[in-house]
Image 1 (spheres, rainbow over the protein chains, first blue to last red):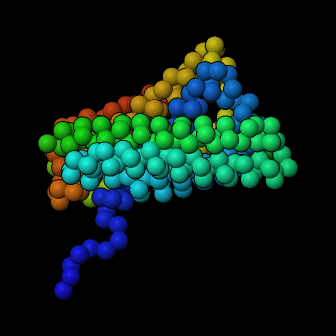
Image 2: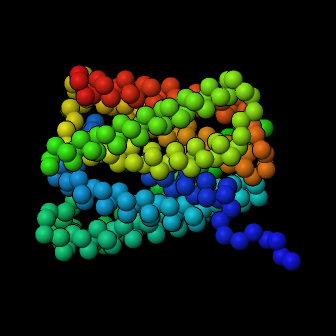
Amino acid sequence: MDNKPTGLQPERVLEVLTVGTGVLVGLTVGIALVLHLTGELGPILTEIGTFPVSLLFGYLWLLALVGASQVKIGTAIADGEYRRQLENGAIVGVGISLVYLTVVFIIGFVAPTPAVFDPASQPMLVIVGVGVIGGAIGGLLIVASLLGLGIYSKRLTN
Amino acid sequence: MFGSEYVLIRSVHVLGAGLLLGGSSCLWLLFLLDRDISVQLLTWFELLFWPIAAIVVFTGLGNIVGFGVAPPGTNAGLAFTLKLTVLLAIVVSSVLRSLVVREGQVAGQASVAGAGLRRLYAMTGWLFAAVVLLAGVVAYG
């Protein structure tokens, strides 16, 4: 009889939840800090409103969890396959960036209220280009940081 | 309706932060009292920690929409800057803490007694205590 476990392993569930939520919460707090220091945090959040902020946060959380499920920090450290996971991080960063931008564009075009930025007044290719490059660099840096934390976590365990 | 909506958001925010502060402090005390702590217990805490942390941050944004935020040049604004900085430290140290617990799971350990893990729970508890103090300054000046 094949006793190979099926579905997500408990340690994988913890890793995906930690990576996905940790990255989302860290980025949200970091961006909030930068916006606060520039004096734009209050006005931007008030303009968007509570309900759209809730939807945006929930949507980003889902994206972050799906993205985290594509990156295997623990396995990468155990097997030494850092490069593959760094590539995965860059691909996931681009994917999340494109999915996010697509939805923001759609909402921007159809929403009756003013959007965070008005897509009609921005050169589409520039935004997509910046999103793709930013997503790739961001994904790469995030996975590199997580690999660093993962390696350190092994040292703390031993 | 306006009042009740933001009172609910603030209540969930405070309750969530209280759970994270209380939970991490209790686990730190358990580590001090008994060197071997069940990996299953720590896993449960970590699995609850992240959704609650996300809700705390999300309701924190709702708080800002409802009650506003002081400009960075003021005392309350400086306290808010410090609060966000401490929150960032909590997030980074908590990712590390969860990954250490994950290592215990992978190794198939029933319990752990690591000094590193004990310090990480202590750090989370103390940093959350600092956040609560800073939140008081942000809210009441």
